[in-house]
Amino acid sequence: RWLGDVYKRQALRKELDKTYNNFTNRLYQLYSGMSLIELRICYLIKISVKVTDMAKILGRSKPSVSSSRKRLYKKIKGEDGTPNELDELIADL
Image (tube, rainbow, N blue to C red; front, side):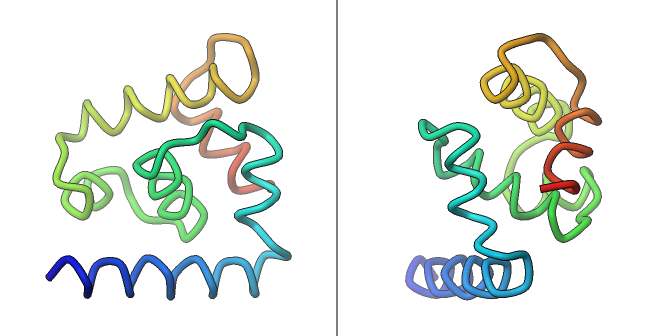
């Protein structure tokens, strides 16, 4: 199972980078200290996965995913924001 998950993440990264002009590197330019879970959340946001589905995919609660999105926005922008503001930032990247 673990190897399958790694393969799926690598395939998703490759497709996102190809489709969205090196998305991962541009994401790391915004915030180089991004954790694996934060990166996965950004990938899911980029492909328009709903928060409820993100929670299922990541094995976390919906409030936990929303809190992570809010914290990540603050890490990237240096100011408080909402989970939806992170979604908009990632969608525009």
